[in-house]
Length: 185
Image (cartoon, rainbow, N blue to C red):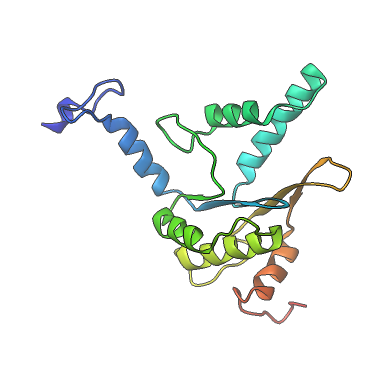
């Protein structure tokens, strides 16, 4: 009986739901985990390299075309149009968020451990801790992760920094989230 209601996106079920949106939300839940945390001195994104690169390209195109920085709200809207985290098309501001596999557990941990005055280093530690407890893996390694930070330099310019695999390995060791290897320094 439900097949009668779920073959088109604009057809509502008798309960008033769009099944296609629910299917898409479920599909997002099966993807790899991505965590974003707002810190007082920047933003930490774990495993979000494609999204960061998309934002950078869109902001650069805007700056090239209009000779001024792209407004943040417009960049967010543009990202949501390109890579919707919510298939319903909604977007909103979050201080700490997770999507992908085990996102409910990750969201719960972020809600419990996030604080408003968190630094980028503390946000990095929190993001890595959350991933270590929610990923379907025995241990985190730099081969399984990407970590990027976006922040303002003292001169006021926006800086994007992608952690190298070597520095990410050192961070995992520093925070006690990886086993030391023979070649780790």
